Image (cartoon, rainbow over all chains, first blue to last red; front, side):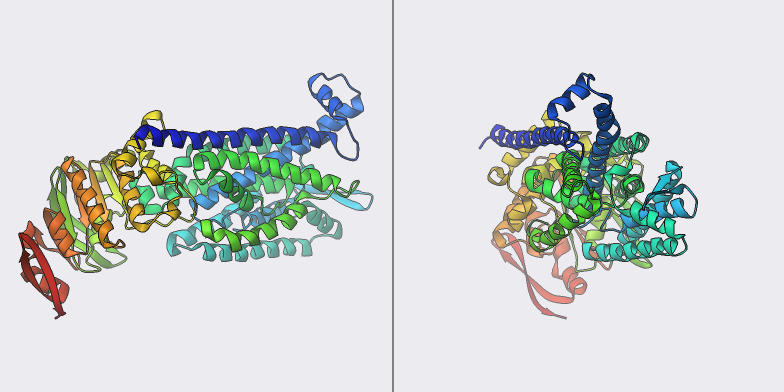
Length: 356
Length: 253
């Protein structure tokens, strides 16, 4: 077999991957349109299209679409994409198929930091609407910074573990469990000293819910997510090499220590921003990269961008289901992802071994 | 390409692993590093590729100190073939070899990178397994894939860390023949190797390490029983088998 044929076969497999990407983006587009049209206020698809592109419909429809549905949809997409790409990057950087913001305790740490800012530092105020308490974020930057600092402390523990103990996936996950319960305890302690209305608000805030972010929060998430994704994509060959082991990566010219630390810090920042605006959405970061690998294999050059698209797509789909399944009640999507993610996680543990 | 190592000293924590190691390598040499377990063979290989940083001594490539070289530049000159690799993630053989192009590429591999990888695959006869998952091929094939990666890297010197230790007889010979062929093409090889008979047959220069110190260095005379017996603490005899020296271990001493 000549070299040209080997090359042709490789290029064919590459085109299949590109087709997977195109199909994912197309499905994402369809779900966006569907998601805009469904809900307690139904809008026919034709009206959705004309409102977005022609701007000639009633102000009520216009209002629902631009101020309620679209921010929520974009939030779900960005959160799903961000958590998935953070998970994909963490898995490669730590050579750990079980790595994700959630399993390593980083999400819980970010949630603690955010709750700390909201309650103790007064970055949020509590508003009572009928029986339901809602927290109003006065200072989104303070919340994000606190979430980030807290997430970084969890990341530092994981990184120290990798550096000095050469931790196995199992040890890392056990440490994640410990960190997760430590930070959950911290959040509980904050609640213990809070007033009853604040407790309700913190609990409510913790549910991962795409409906909590408005345009300004969305802007902050985008400003952090886009450069983060580009950074991860720029490093895809470093991550490919690191998956083969630190020694191989070093011999291929990778500055392993720096790539690992910077990558984990960027992934933590991404997690912190998402968690501080929408709460904890579990399992997305863990499961999505595995789903994507099943379809297109392990090459990071494709895994990273496709984890974004697939993560955005699946979180949006989950959120759309969550807000319509027992309409008019809108379920927080975090509840749904945990219900779906936990069995998938167990499935990965049982079945996934053969390809880890 | 010339490598000069002078006064290398490396310790883990407070335990010295290499002491005052000096050696020189010339273009196209196959240097066999032999010695018992724990004598520092792998450590020396890793120091040469800056995977480990020695506490003292210098390593010069064509007169240039490797610590002052850019990582990518060093990777274009020196390739490293680990003892084995065991990734928990799926990757195809082609992509695993394409990794060797990392020092050359930025966002994505160029057409030249892909061609180079295809050529290496054909050169080493790996066409049939090129699109298979690396986890689904045999240990011997995997070792060849790791060598293919170093060749795709276009390194002028390739460091092999016990390339034959996990392989069956046939693959041992195939892998060492590959190394020898590459040396004939001008790619210098440094091979840490356990099997003294294979070393005697394939290498043309030898360094025998004992507890981190060079016990003997030079040509085939390094593998004389006089050296092997005190270092390995084994009684051996050397037999001449139609021109090839065969070392027969007898009993521990």
